[in-house]
Image (cartoon, rainbow, N blue to C red):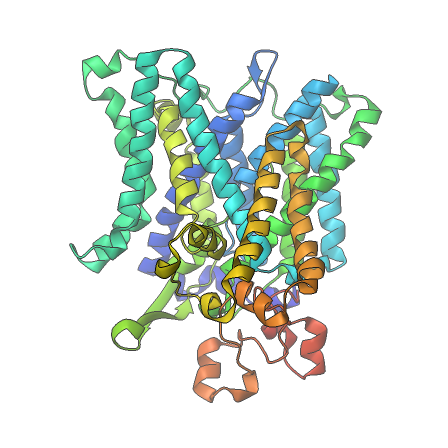
Length: 547
């Protein structure tokens, strides 16, 4: 709080808030956040029907995203982190719903108590500075988690499109065209940065808005001709006015379940806390990566406290909880970055010179999401075919694999040996047999966790994710040498001591470099605070977790 409070007024008043970068970022993040929110609402709508009444739909998801986003933009410590309803939260919410149905408990009161307990745990963890433990998380856990979510997206989208063939064949075929078309066009447009046609500005714009352009086009397809309009396909269900999908009151009756059930909700509350501890802190960490050269510092513990307060609010309202979004959080920071090019030829690359650190872009993108709940725009949402949102699931899943070293190593397993190559250096530093075994074990864990998400025990999948940290810290070092592990599980970023840098380099990095005393498992490039202090390094700069 002390570190961030001195920047609070500047977050609202610095001249950067009027820049074209900030304006573009507002609209970019609006479209980047609203599309997945609507998509997850379709998943929740299809799986939370109780007594012929949908408990969580588009209104609940969008309202949760907007409300908590506004709160976090105003009161959060690091406003560059974007909040929203995530895929894991959707899976968790469906799992809680299934448990309540099996136990004969009313869903919304149990869901509310789950979040109340989780909110309390968040507050306790934040007040005891436990977010420092995120330094244990390495690329191994993050990339396994990323591939798991990507697989879930692909499975969810493909299953939804396939299930329609059990009903109306004509509608199923049109839905298949809409879904596959949405995914393929979005994938094609997202690669616009590699095109040689058009100027760079337009290529970047096309790539940034690939998913939005694809959704808008394939939403319009069913209305293009009278013949297509006659095909009855399912569309997004939203009420005519701003109200809950089921028509219930906004506040949940906490006394509508037994005291024993309310106390029992502490178990899923703990699981939700584990999920958010991992998911939110990693998303926040990625939005404050060293290459962005942020100058105002971090506030991990305070941010986790604010997330806890948000969870309390969403619990009382019976709407899904939110946490930091991946990839939206780092994309937000990137969209606010001013860059310059360094190097020549193949070594030419972009380097961030500074980032427009402010709260306006986060606040306005969340407010714009909330405006979509006004009656005129609710009518527009009802025009969106569910199949296009299923296609967005396919796109998000497929787009999650590039840049993931775990996914790259899985592809190398089935690549002809003579053709194996990678821009990462593990192929030259680690014997192929060790790479193969390491990857197969990681793939097996990912498959097991994915299998768990399809069972009644799906609510517990965050605990399996957390176990990956234990595996990486305690098990792998017994079977792999330190050099092999660092090659297979490092962030690939240079580690330079602050005292070895020139004055110009220090100024460019604005104090956000890592020191010599880095962790042995470089992971996400964090320096333990205690070690930083022992080496007379400014801990507030060497580790973003010291808040």
